[in-house]
Length: 170
Image 1 (cartoon, rainbow, N blue to C red):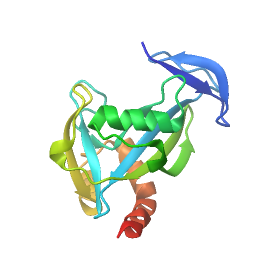
Image 2: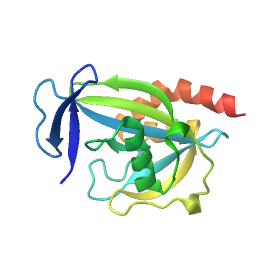
Image 3: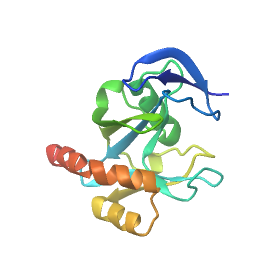
């Protein structure tokens, strides 16, 4: 059983927790974190959602819900490691963008890391494939609906910021 901290609309912790899988009450927000791992050579790391998951078979970046007691950075560090085996220090993650919708606060990060595909360790039941993709390939995957529509819209909003990070690494 997993629990998440409950925040208010201004990102303040309420001191309450939410049990995953139960409805959220009005005015309650959970925290979701995502990371674009980029190689400094024009590619981002994508994983494919495993069978049995929502949006199964679609590609995405790493991320997930922060667990109760975790900060945003602790959550993204844990999620990335669980889903890919990539270990990174909190200080290595750069916040790209923060957002919210009707029930979720989002923190979108980027991480510069060159990792050979054969060194990626996928989490059974979560992810079943991994690839490095260029921005053009991501656009083609979006066009073909191979990327989860939520992640696709995030990518399109964050692509200019990611391209700036790529240029800075060259």
